[in-house]
Length: 292
Length: 266
Image 1 (cartoon, each protein chain N blue to C red):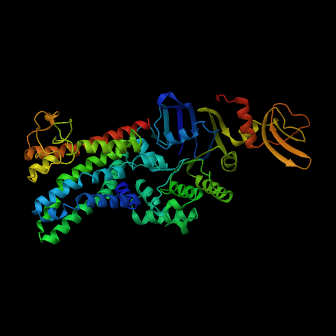
Image 2: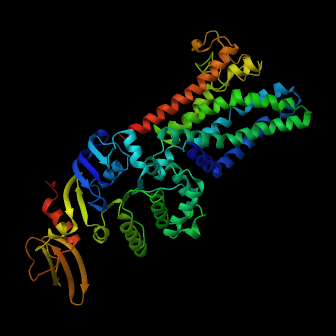
Image 3: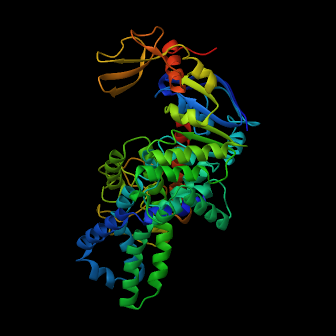
């Protein structure tokens, strides 16, 4: 299911522009959306999920136009959505919550709906806690309930906004793997500011900053942005002043710094770039201006 | 709509506040009516039931409004709203389901208190017709009032903080109740939009008198008062009109709330 976004703008009350003339095509499969906090990722996700209406521009999901009521409804029938600030009803159990969302998603067959809820509770390892009220759940457990509800109606389009926030490393890896497995014939839009989540799952991605699209390409393209600009330097003195500091690793006799910089700091050695380096190089190059 | 109705009903019934507010209200009612209870119980069934409903309709809708005031805005507060809006279910349908589910659950204690009194009366006096009167009165006086209060309470906090709404509602309810004489202060008492059901009380059940403000009429014009255009002569037609207007105002309030929610996504 392909998503075609043309000149999408979203302006909120009092004129705050969250999305500014975004034109983007999202193909079937895993697609990553990167950007710093406040870049407009969540607004874009909410528009794609039909929660917010575009101010201008057009969004087609498959053949359906999200601006029309029937189009939005058709999209939402095939949609699994995990919002960034997922909330749950504290007085319901996980099983009841999934049942409620399933009903709203149009899963009218009671037996099938309950069976699906049980399967998904198993997938997210919540079977033993399925009949406990959600107010007793930890934030990670609630996140897993959110993942389960997103998968309820066997969605063809899955929109997940910061899905791994609050998950422990093992759960994070498991969820990333699950998303990658689901991709296949589906479209999975993964929005995050955790570069590693994208690096491990998405071949294609876009980067947003200040509501504008600043990059669209493959993970390799973005990594290549940092080629020749990544350096490591071990020093006992202060961190290198120029460039973007990627990491600082204490070691015997000083600290080993990794930087993305146009010119090598004194005593630096070139290093092989990663996606994170590419993202930081892009941020540094653009500071951040729109992609053509 | 049915999904929202079912689950909102369930969540509201599980809410501890629902039962603690009910307990407090029962105690309050007991304190207010303990002395007059034996007199109530010795009245004829129709008078006893109407007096009970009039007394119940002062404090119970306030508790009812308090318990409903956070139901709609909490979806946003809990972070569930976006999730619900991303489903193909219709927003007006969900709003209606939430309204009916929450309102029905919150009305349950109100009904329990009123019909509890009716049952006590029936058993004590061996007068089963009291239950029929109670049912008719609850349907024509309390249900329209609760539908109206429910809609206002669910939707009011969309445009103001819930705490402010609750304070304002208490003021509004006391002002519009029969406790304030319409000659002294412009009030809604005895108008067709009087949510305590003055027209049905007087027309359907022939009750006059017992007015805390000193008057004996429950509906119709008040010489020298403002808003007499809203006080047609009490007849069967105007009694039904009053019920229709109150239910219509509830529907109008819900429609306005839908528009507010819709506008927020634009």
